[in-house]
Length: 611
Image 1 (cartoon, rainbow, N blue to C red):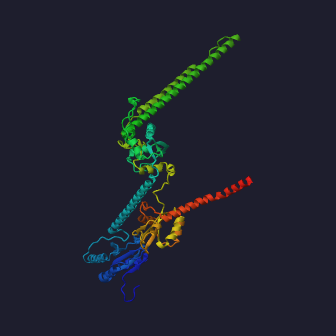
Image 2 (cartoon, helix red, strand yellow):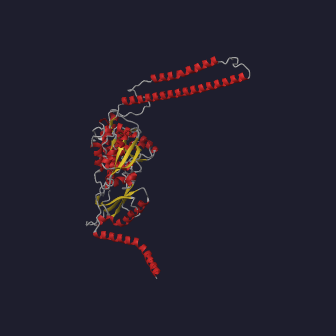
Image 3 (cartoon, rainbow, N blue to C red):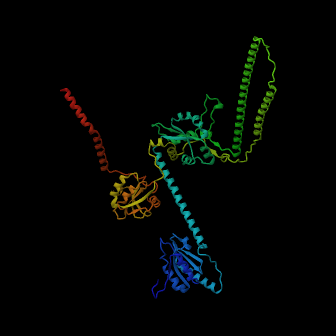
């Protein structure tokens, strides 16, 4: 409540009951309602404008009020927002809204709203008004603008993430390529495995050996890794052909004394070299005078051609099945015929034996005829044969009714890639980066035998900054957890986005002749995979720690861009080199000393034997 004699500038509303009561109490006045959230409070920058709008412009015609959006249901759409919002209400209806802390604009809108309210009362001016819970055009435009800004921010973040990953991937492969110069690979598409064996003689000609050979089921993600920075156009037909079967990847190696460029060597052998005709080979068996890459590359077929091939393959399968069925029927008929002949032979033999027995017994040789129903059996056999003849006729009829429609897609048919696209049969990397990435993807064990494989995906990390006076204590913690310290450096300034770089290492900083300043900071990129390193660093009282992983990664990327410190080489002084040599000699002596007592004991034993 205002003191006696003072004019109340702004009232407060913090619940639904006060909100409804205030609208009724100031029904005929223009209400300028400032809406704020509890976590940030009301706007202080517009205090003078509110005072001027009440005391100088509006006076009794306007009511100033502050409303807490967290506790008023009608204002819930403004909850958890830090931007100040001013709503103008007349007779319980919303007429206008202003966003932002612009005092001059607020006073102008107050004057304009009071003028329109006066015209409405005198000449009956009709204005568009709406319920407080509904969105004004200004609000809708503001929401759309905010959504657009958020979308742009997300796109910028995603673009930065992709570019950062690409730069890290390039750096990792560049470092990896320096250690795998004597190995290379060729990838054969599933339909061109035979090309490896056709070209086997060429491997001997260029003096290289097969180090490993294995087939892989390549997925879409695997195809991106295999064709990273390649000159192969990853069109639909190329990727479809690569992922429809087992891809053969063959690793080759050079001898240790061979110093040729392996990438150029394979590229020349596959993409440029034209085979020389052989004198002892007939012309029809000679290889065409084109490079191996062009010899095995194909053009994807159109949908009509693919459907025609599938139709012919299906018809061939039906013909094969029919031939197999006919062969089985013929075999069954032969076996049945042989069985019938054997039965008749046995029956004739039985009748002959029975006839001889009757003659020996003095009876007539042939018994009296009986009605055996042979005619009925003949009819049944004829009926079964007629039924058997109808089945092939029905099957032939079904096969004849199936027609070929090459331009009509059928539900459930396999995917057909577009026609006229180039599908390589084989591929060799065009540069060291492509070679390093594909080899680390297909054959990580072989690469690990030569050098460790880094990852372009860093673990979640944060930025920790210390005063330079604590560098020795921090260095002890860093040496304790070397795997968790991703990077570090020395900078000037507390703000990660404006700090200037001074030195890459503590040793480099100590050697600088520049006078030390109180704003010199030791910045460390700390992994969050484990909590202990960060806890121990926090115990040293840092001057700055990132609030979360997201902001930490953004801050670390600002201070430690991709490739940070790669070109810096730590130089050792002559004294440090001598100390290193002394330490190495001392370690070597320590490893030899345990054998000395044994040798002395052996000498004593020899002396005793001589005595």
